[in-house]
Length: 300
Image (cartoon, rainbow, N blue to C red):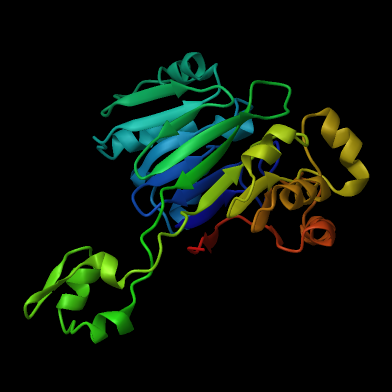
């Protein structure tokens, strides 16, 4: 499972940062979290391809989080996409995305399905579940949590050898096939450890500190939380429905997450070391994201 931060700017793009967008490769499909202006071009500079995007999850409809969607869809059409695209978002999603699909002259060559969601809902998808909570923002806004299903236990090679497994039978057994050894049959469960929990990723979108998001993020593998401002501007940031880096770290610590990535940085910060430093005082496993950063989310 890999994250690619395509855009980490807050409110509008800058020379250093593109508008909000994050690609999440679940190993089965590519998911896009928000789609700010310039997202399709960021894909060309990244390790991912926008043609692989299967689902888009929009947190809200401020321009820096969705204005890349019309260009992305039209480019997919121009590149002869035929696979369906599913778009998820707040309750006003259907009306706004339908308008997006009518912008300009182009031929939509693939099915697009819009899924309005409310806080507290969940959807079961391709090997993972997505849950939502409301966010603290002036317009309808959601945060998302993606949970993998349980994983098979680790393959015990030493145990397999002791049972007589040799050569190509290792791969067959590891792939879930039973293997005959003499008169006996070795089953995958004979050489695997206990089932492991899947990984979980939480994305806040834009939000002032939120108890609903804290609950959504409980014990998550990774939290991506906005950090629009430094500590000295917390009150102003909160009034506009945003958080400071310190507040994001407080939420991460309270939720018991394993690691925190900060994003959505105000244009006043050309460097993010101040924000990362303020967060690490509260929660050591805090990291400031940057455009085009790849991060592998390892199995616990």
